[in-house]
Image (cartoon, rainbow, N blue to C red; front, side):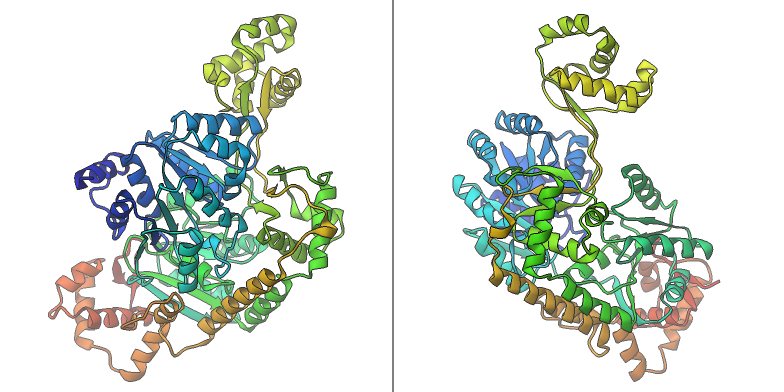
Length: 637
């Protein structure tokens, strides 16, 4: 396929003139029919790598991902571009699943997003036989590996689905993968004629720093006062998000907080305020950041030590996507190391306790053995643990282990608006209206507002908007919709925005559940290695931070980064006298106003970028200069 075709697609739908590094090579590999593994760090533009070739080909691309929020977000982005796309996920009404898959079989979509457990359902497999599938895209591909940091058993079923369409190529994508995980992906997805593309894990513009501090909030304040611009501050629990945001606001730094327990509208409003720079700092749990492409984040600060290098690398990598200088800072104390080890022990509960939690879930939702396959339910962990007098943290980890065994799935809160589908023939509507005059106005308004699409598909609605149209409180609208649903006129799928528990197998007899103890020990071994690696990462002060991470991900660093706290410390040890001529030249340039890196390099006497970097760092460390929100350098006030 000619180059101009894929460039035209990029220009038409993404409004970009050029691809990012490796994107074009990956796209050409897919179009050539190769099974392709693409490892691109956070912000590297993974979705373009499968979306562009799928648009260039005639047929449907099946996209497999476990993240419902990201699935919904990508579908909305594609539709906004005029590209037909849909998703099938837990929480949807069975009739909506049926209609969506049928539309896929009829060729109405270019992209169909599904969760991996959907691949083994009879309904999906039957519809797939009639779909013209031209590409399988597996996002978050590290989930297929038991050596990864987020293993999900349903990913192992992708190979079985591949066997039903053996000539269709596959592209697997992930932001981070160790050598063991890469081998697992290629093996378990049964790659043929494979191609591997991996962008270096080096982030040339990102400076990693570790600080051991007892008074973390004061250190955070110092960092944010020295480095201007947008920031994300990650903490481990929801309560701390609010506490630290309030602390920053008290010290005149505009901040807000974010976690999965907030209402959908609150999350959206706070996220938009941060993206639009109305709020400078977002204090959040790791529920924040997925799918957000804000290029000008100058600092990402971790106030707790993450559980894995993979998780840390992805979150830290949300800084500096614009290519300008940015900082990834981790602040810890001795207590954090103790908590990390304690958390590791708590996160692998005894099997009998896991069985007890599963039985409690079955009782909670009143499920008979053999029922509830792929059924999803609203889930409130705090209410659940209170109901059955279960310890909160251990219960959470028991649920995560049930997930890693493939029995259930816990989806964090995502927003799904109410949907309506008219389930009777249009010719029967008038008869219903005559027989039910109290519902006539509501039904007419529904049809007038949302049109005939209600007969063909589930359509998202707003009960509040309908209420305004008929001059009634939205609770009256809900009552009317529920009455019509009971009468069989509509299917009313009410709004969801709570976390969901999905039973990915038919409900088991808890006493007879078969646990893979070998796998359990392997997962514990992997988690132990990841925790010990993170402890080594924060504790050591001899090896360049960037080189440390590169070695973990299987790269051989050729030079140190020169920017991290270790490199700067080593530099000062060997060179107490900084390059004064560069210092003077830099200060002279900045006296006329803020300048970016390229301008400074172009206007110094000798174009030695390494010496310039050292001088800039030295001046920054001494608080003689600072960085502005857009990545420029300026004199400190």
